Image 1 (cartoon, helix red, strand yellow):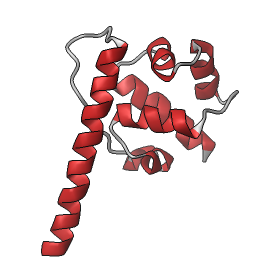
Image 2 (tube, helix red, strand yellow):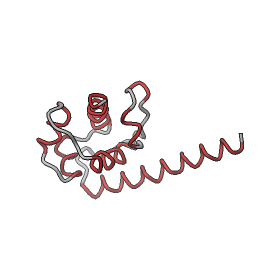
Image 3 (cartoon, helix red, strand yellow):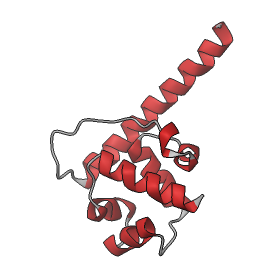
Image 4 (cartoon, rainbow, N blue to C red):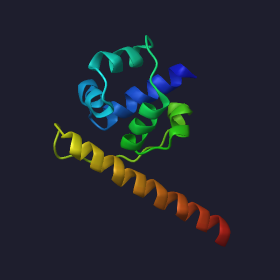
Length: 112
């Protein structure tokens, strides 16, 4: 299970073009903590995993799924070196988008 989480974390971090250093700064960690987490030498707190998942555009329970079933929001960044404020904004927008998608799914079930 932990290997799936680490693999998905790394794949998603790369997918949104965030370096280990940027992710570490975003999570208020050292870059070596991200490197060690991705290589399996260290764990990451649930609160940091939740924060990262918001940035990835997924619910935390989705990071436990096999990568074949992993569906994330995939924003297109025009800038490769995003500020921490920009990462926070992206995370907040992703949370809103995920809530809208969840409400749509609930409404579809009720109306379907």
